[in-house]
Length: 74
Image (cartoon, rainbow, N blue to C red):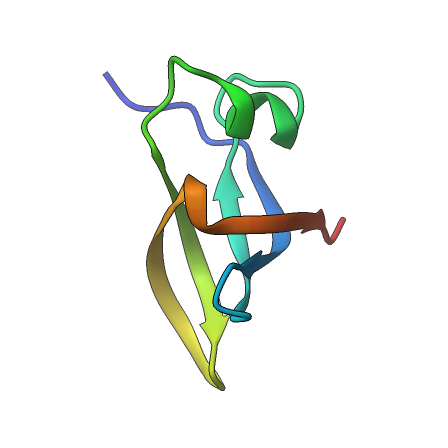
């Protein structure tokens, strides 16, 4: 079964000060906060098409505990 795709453009700030820009799949959730606060989801968020430290096109797996803030870009 294929996972539903509902990608949102975001910026993420981590506890170490790193900012990541990319896309996150919120799947069947209606809001980004629903995905991040869901206890049913994994403890990690996958950011695709990510740009970090001047290097675009990365896929980055972020532990949710390390997220300070997330800002939707669209």
